[in-house]
Image 1 (cartoon, rainbow, N blue to C red):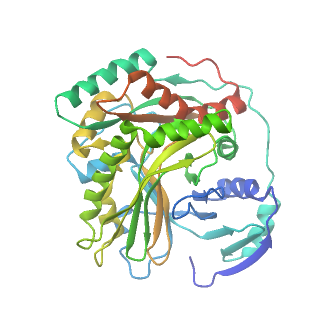
Image 2 (cartoon, rainbow, N blue to C red):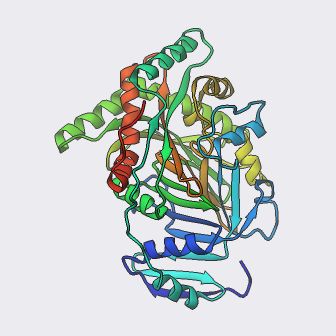
Length: 426
């Protein structure tokens, strides 16, 4: 951002966020909006902030300049091919670049009752946002939807993955299925805001890269850097919320005591400890919380926290290259699992199961795992999203398929509320 920037504080109007998102979509090639929804989370969720700009920057340059400015961006799952001898030949449902970063021209920080705008002419920006019209017309066309796997098809793949585990090739694999189709032209911010209503999460984000939009309702942090400290918080273990407090307490108890879920979680914790050790000062890798149980609106998750102290002069890209993609979305061992994911899945993951976040001017950053998220190509009126679960030796095909449906439910509810879609085509 230019050195001549100035800052203005204005009261926060309830409709201001939606106006800001519409304003950003109309005026900028890139933006990122982040929000924790005030949900308690170990080490906190995303800051409530909006960044917008028109200048993209390559991932290779991020964090290497001494006068580094804030950067916002996304790294897709298929960036893995640049770090390992891997490939991605499956069908691309929405054509997404492997990485997109940009420098903001406008930064808007949103407090409980005040907005702080940092830009060249903040007062003009405030007036422009306040006067932005928000359209609420529903489209005449209906949304179409296809799903890659019904329960029978899922069970067939499940059996093949389990055979790999029995043969000792892998210990655990995160297999994902996809939903995709056509999406009538409509304001994508409405989809995001409705998704936040259906599933408020600590790592909610709305990201624009030209004609591509990501509506993200993620419960999972990938990496957070604070000074020389690096934190990762993988999720493995899920259960639905109960219909009443008693039923919910029983479900939470069953998750906390499940040997299967704990084993899944521990495998990924060990994988993440190994990844962090490649970047850390000797002896500094620590598991600060193991098998933590955290409940969200429609799902309860098992979350562990692993931290380390970074070696001196480790760059952002080096951190990513040694840890990406996150083990919670691959399985263990990581490289063999990624080879098998390419074999068994039917779609190119692209932005799904990648990472999205922001880097501040000091080099500190916070990035989430892109899950429970919808990718939209507004130029082609197409969309896709993925859901998955970990397959282990003790897993059950029916249970894992139902877990995928649980994770898909908030997105499906969002789309049905806005579009009243046609029946799903298997």
